[in-house]
Image (cartoon, rainbow, N blue to C red; front, side, top):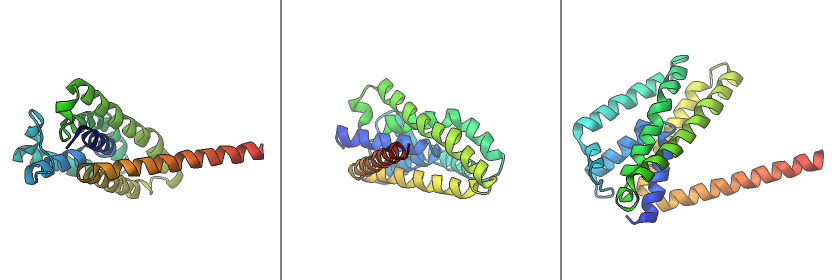
Length: 190
């Protein structure tokens, strides 16, 4: 995997870690262990270890269920404020070929910032808004949706980084268009 696709993959994996810390790490570990699509360099190849995969699976299950229980989900978000950015840093740095092409400190920092940003938006803006507007009833469906998005982004980032980049560009273009349209409407109305 060349530098560009490795970077795209790293950004996708670290962003998905901001939603669920363990899904992208599990995807990297399983794909690396059972396919030739991802070849982790040392020390990141430790993720392929069976015990590490089992621990990631157990931690995923704990986070999955904790995020579905009212009140516990908010405590989980507080704990995950440290875990998700760290997982994003590991996901970014361990992603196929990136660590050999980019300084490890830069890779870790980029992953930390990307995952931390996604987590901050999720826990400080989206989840409180869902809780306030639905009385907490919307938290479980939103949590399931977050896990599905994290899984989809992780798989997409590993399997098809270029398609992931195209998706990000299309979504960004749509968001810019939507914000521009909204600003124009407000300007015309005011």
